[in-house]
Image (cartoon, rainbow, N blue to C red; front, side, top):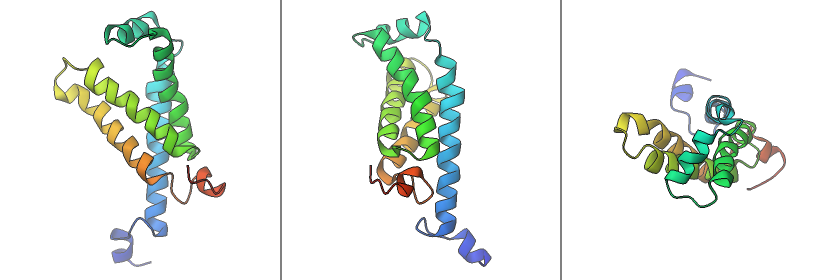
Length: 140
């Protein structure tokens, strides 16, 4: 492979697919172990935060948010059920950026929105060639 093909490879080529896999694995692991794992066990502060933004059944939605980040991140990293996991995480990040950090300056909520758009990308694109979804022949 020459340098031009490496630098300008499309996402359908092997280089693009390797890059996509590295990106998916990194984002999934960071989401799971930096953001999701820290929410377990579910704290009263998280439950109160969910209640304060108006969600009904705040205990259930606090668990859903934490599981979305932890389990969704692991699934994203594995490329297993990539699209559904990404949709749940995108929704969680939308809520975080729009409601949880509503009063914060943009540089605080920017990370939630960045994760949201990365998850939207994976919800649209899927896990790629080097994912468990692809190995199992799944289009989900």
